[in-house]
Image (cartoon, rainbow, N blue to C red; front, top):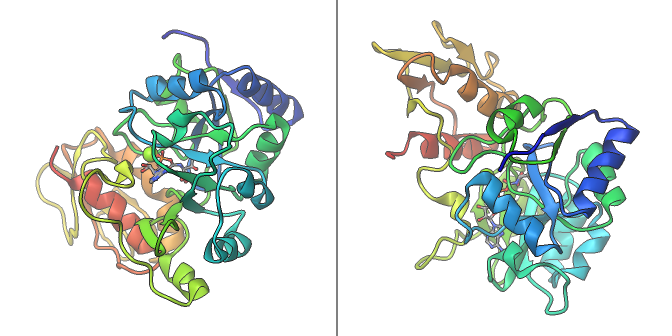
Length: 314
Ligand code: TXA
Ligand code: MG
């Protein structure tokens, strides 16, 4: 696996080149408002297999299919009235819906790893939607990191992990949400499969009922939820109110002595946007990254979820 990875600018010629590469079965990392994704044509089994190979990811992990418009969802999945309502309200945006797959789609079966459900998302970033529109194919894209590492929020992060393994990165600047999409399953009762960039409270309000948890037993419905998943090289200690020998502090709110602060003002949106970039920046500075306590509300749920995984034994 040794190819030249082009860094494409976010202008018309960059988008055209990225779309052309995707249509040819190439692998292109694309910016979204959440994190960068590693895209491949979801109808091309070899392209999808290439995504797993480039990431070094276990191939049983199903992928999110990215679409330019909510109106295209019905080509791939069956939307219940609740699914329609969430799509209408929150797409484009940082929400992924896991829905019963239509029998007659042209999607490669590898995309859903053989599951009867497919994950769909319409990203909010105009650059991503423009690329998807110009590509004219559904694009399967996991986060554009090597398997087990933190998700990339800048083109340079993608290059760090995947340079030489993919065809191109479309540089859309820093991602502004900074954590991955919220994943909701809608094949029976509405389920929160992964907290993310859209606060679960807003989804519950739109549905008028609480979200259930992931189904229990057997394989995890979202393998990205495996304990040690978002791991920097350093180990991570949570809920830190000070630092010990061998630690650097990743602060939140008032955190004297912090090497970096996710949000000095205690703003969860700002903290989410900074999270993965700061974990990368601090990695290698000390054996342990200590992290200030972060409230378990709104985007704080997604931030704490990622941090608990980063802190899990591995
Ligand atoms: O914000 C995001 O969601 C980013 C950007 C690139 O869109 N993508 C992302 O993809 O985070 P990934 O592959 O790193 O995480 C997707 C999660 C995985 O945990 C996967 O197991 C779950 O979605 N998933 C995908 N398809 C599924 C399905 N059919 N049923 C259940 N879970 C599914
Ligand atoms: Mg991921």
